[in-house]
Image (tube, rainbow, N blue to C red):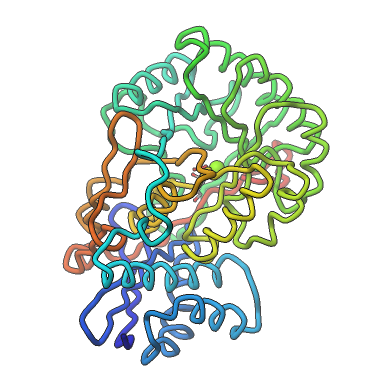
Amino acid sequence: MRIESAETVVTSPGRNFVTLRVVTADGLTGLGDATLNGRELAVASYLRDHVAPLLTGRDARNIEDTWQYLYRGAYWRRGPVTMAAIAAVDTALWDIKAKAAGMPLYQLLGGASRRGALAYGHASGRDVPELLDSVRAHLADGYRAIRVQTGIPGLDSVYGVAASAAGSGERYDYEPARRTAGGPVLPVEETWDTRAYLRHVPSVFEAVREEFGPELPLLHDGHHRMTPIQAAKLGKSLEPYDLFWLEDATPGEDQAALRLIRQHTTTPLAIGEVFNSVHDYTTLLAERLIDYVRSAVTHTGGVTAMKKLLDLAAVYGVRSGMHGPTDISPVGMAAQLHLDLAVHNFGIQEYMRHSPESLEVFRTSWTFDEGLLHPSDAPGLGVDLDLDAAGRFPYEPAYLPVNRLADGTVHDW
Ligand code: CS2
Ligand code: MG
């Protein structure tokens, strides 16, 4: 099964996506997501200029060998750009292999371990009333688990709060990558105050629990902004509200910092959406410092690497919580849904709905019903790329915001 071509498609239906499209000599097509929000063209070039020429002529069936060839053969290892490029190749080859077998990818990963994957959506509000409306809207949309983010008194704009009013009927959520109108494209800058945040968040969860009761699984994203002791303080203050998880409580590259948080709180911890290798998790897993693995297939080397990571996590009782914002393309999302269905140590799947324009470009077949996602039984990933539609949305530079403290010091966004 000879690879005939490997084309990189950059398209921007409301937000930027990078997709690898691999075609074999016998006419099978495989897709892989290579989207790295705010640095998309770096991955597109890595694929187009350095990887695609190596793929032509290779046997598409040799997925593990191709993964090792691209990982070890590059000499320079790991990092978000390299691992997103390898992920795209790996995912496309799994798409092809499943299509050749005439079955959905999850069947090649061990078959279904559950009816569907519990999804969570992003409720947000600039204030608590708007947040409560957003939780209601997401429950009405069929979600059975909800992430809760709000504005912070005294701060103009905060990560995770949708620009539009809650309940506006908007079918998709907060889009962090923004384009400054006119002139050179620069990241939007936001101001942050951790102590104001720590004072405010417990009252938000008090209000949500008061309104929706103790059962509803609630999640919260700290988005890398706290020191370990601040994260310990927040985890402890949220214990009465029984969160499903507190995510990215502190920058995760300091794996040992999670020891301190773990000593102070029983609030479950999730981390890893900015990780790109199993090596980023070894201390966290071996010492059981986290409860959920947050990586996305797109950023961690693909289906092959994610399956190995989740199998290692299972040894330590850690479950999956794969990253699923709109900057994971429908191709990357579909690959995750097949893993969600198959692995035993599934936890939850993040599911921000893609925009209507995105779904014009990417024809998906997954279903979302009674709070559960299912990848469908279409052969392969179950996603098609409409090249004509993709061509209607040319790339536009967009950057994730930059965060600063009140004195101007750059902080984690
Ligand atoms: C967030 C992401 O979904 C999440 O948990 O952390 O929305 C993150 O901000 C984006 O993926 C950044 O591109
Ligand atoms: Mg996050």
